[in-house]
Length: 242
Image 1 (spheres, rainbow, N blue to C red):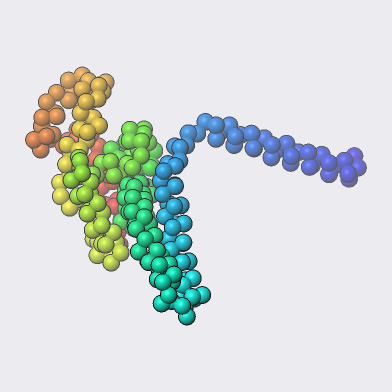
Image 2: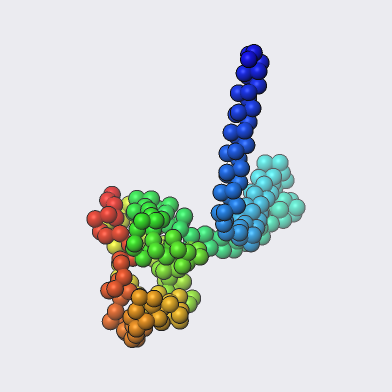
């Protein structure tokens, strides 16, 4: 076989290998479901960025290109639009995006040192802790940390956001203590928001009567889910250090 033939055969083998790998990747992608993009959230992010950019450009235009005519009426109106009008929608859009984005696991995981062990355990397929069980089985569709750590209603949302601001401040100024732990006992009634009316909760597979009277006891603060189930998060010794 000549050199050209051997080169052609080698190139053909490489091409077949690449094509085979591409086919496998395509098959794998076809079997993997990706949650559809939040179009409204994406639109809000881009709109806020565009409006903020326009606001900055308008102000710079006046201060640089019209600096000698800054006291003219046209310049004042442009500054009014750039400094007072455009920032209003930017503020509302940014607040909405921030409120929504702060619910995601990626936001909680961004505080790597304190929250890293919690997120790692939650994503560990071998973990039997409640957070991991809910995460890997998609018992919660999204915003896993937020769903379990925010109480009911607007008051619960506000309280969770205020706690979140406290946590961000503690990380920013490095005033948090390791290993981190709950500041107050967890309100297990939050779990009833999903489980309280589910058929599987009312009649568990292992024992149909296992949850009899549990709702009343949980609401009264007499019973915790972890009295029977695994812990929600890793034990103290696995929560990392500073």
